[in-house]
Image 1 (tube, helix red, strand yellow):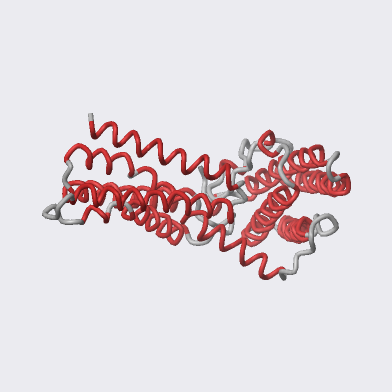
Image 2 (cartoon, rainbow, N blue to C red; image 1 turned 30 degrees about the horizontal axis):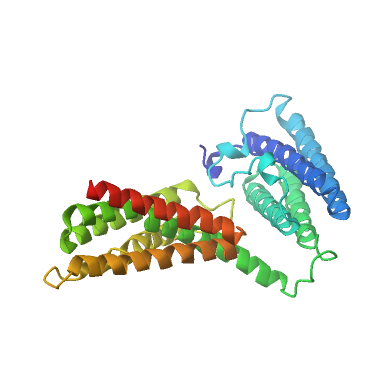
Length: 323
């Protein structure tokens, strides 16, 4: 993948052209999906799709005037920092509020791209076009925010509060939740396998400590290197990586610390295991709640994914350790 700073003007225009074409198709898919449920909103998305097509024609005309008819084979997916668009078939039958949020995110990312691209453009005409497109995308985002005002209860939050919450979710909740999920679930099997293999608390604690710290380092680097934040607005990659790594470690340490119960105590192993099991129960339900609250995941769906998955991993660790 190429860094945004390494793109030439020719490649920037090519990325913008392919991006406008893809966004237009996504908006048309939204319109088709909403046509029966919310026909007025479907009309708005069709209008936005047509505007995206118009932007593509403007960009393509500018490209052909400057560089000729041949486009380089580069898309947004080839540039580090872009959020990958979900496949169109995964956007079917989404709630209107969820579709609105998807549209907001798309326009917010496009606006940032055009603003950054305009800063790097040396050609006056290209810079003006990119600046104008950034303003168009900003208007689209504002319109997407207002799409459901007639259908849903009016939202009393100001635009600043809305943006602040979105940035909070992007920069803190998403990486923190990813880390907490990984740390809480991935360390269950090695921890409980060591526990039931040794029936001793101190060796079990050392295994859990190593697994938690190792997972934290791995997840931290993976998050930091996955997105530099320049296009998505997700903030510093090292901040996100630090949050993700820290929450991964905390997720693993939560059910590891009970094994600090001294082995000299009567029934020390079963006391520690009972406490650790209780901590696991609380962790998994907390993760399900956070996913439902901030990530627009239905609560029962989140419970099925997290709690059931965690129980299966826990059972696998116990079975392996007791073998």
